[in-house]
Image 1 (cartoon, rainbow, N blue to C red):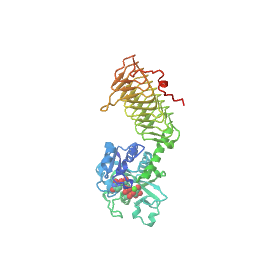
Image 2: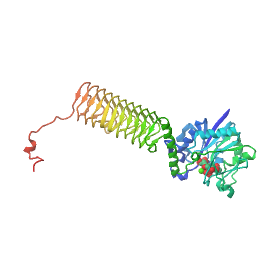
Image 3: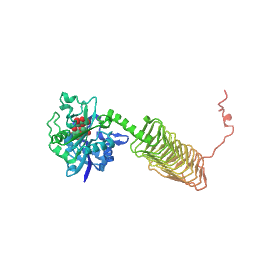
Image 4: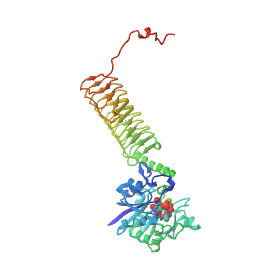
Length: 460
Ligand code: UD1
Ligand code: CA
């Protein structure tokens, strides 16, 4: 059977990141750097990816789980040595292996596919992805013979003056025949300026044996851009962000100002939805068709139904139905399930609550740990008092209920279907169906109190 595998190198320390965390788990658009690479490989048909880990491998394992297999490189003795650690996964297999770096998240599946196709067509033992760089310093240089075949790759530190002038650089990304790679690795030594086992030397070893070594030069050099520090992280993020927003616009989403919209990988947005500036739509979110999202909104792991509008609001791990209006300045906290044709107005906070269809919560309200029915009206300033100082309690409000302004619902408490609660009430006991509850002291009038006390304010 022909295998297509990937070996992804991620054992290095990544010192320049200046971070307590492994470099490759830093995220771009909600996805770890190494995950971008793993997914690009997967998209072009790689069934098994082996990640070579070393520094902070516990964090990388936690991030990727069993999405990949792991090979441990205890000491970082070079890229060739790193690939050797994956040997047990490669042994006895026929087919091809692509070698990628965990810190080059911009590589696309289409470039990997092209490399594999080139490799197969030209019957190569090894194929390296290259690019022309105006300033090639720091990179390995591609040394070709008169016919253009690759003879070897020299590292910057080992290159002579003539070789240093070569502008075609090694991206560090390759496709190998599995067997040829293993044969090449078995002959590697570390006889070079850095005392490392260079993966690049396997190409020279294979070429000397008469095998064909190919090089595929790509024009989109940003794809092989590796990330070493946070400045480069931001540069790569900008490119990936652009790819994502372009993809959504091509699929029928209007972005008023694409540069100010941040959409994570994997987010789904329906056709004819309009996204206004200053909006973040984070991983795990799904937005329906014909929605208006933003400006200045943040949606995290949430689902928004067709035709809904989210204006200047924050929605976290919640669900919003169809044709519902949220905001401006609303806050939906985790576990909220808002129905269809609902209005959640300004300065309304909802936490872990269900709100039924056609219900209106128009302003200045807190709803926590509650179940609110459909066609309910909650007036301005209603507060569900869900916390008694020790634990959270549940409030239930039935269908068609009307709760007046400035009402406190002391949980646990129930307002039954079709009931009314008078404004200013503090409700501690169940309100029966069709009843009106008034829970406030009666108004007292003291006639002529102002004049009898000499308290007139308009008089000099
Ligand atoms: C390597 C190439 C160079 C190429 C450049 C492109 C070699 C010898 N040189 O150089 O020709 O132009 O990449 O960026 O291969 N890693 C390990 N274990 C190790 C060493 C490295 O896992 O022992 C990983 C690193 O984490 C990193 C990647 O391999 O992701 C590249 O290593 P790095 O040291 O940056 O290679 P360069 O010296 O830049
Ligand atoms: Ca490097």
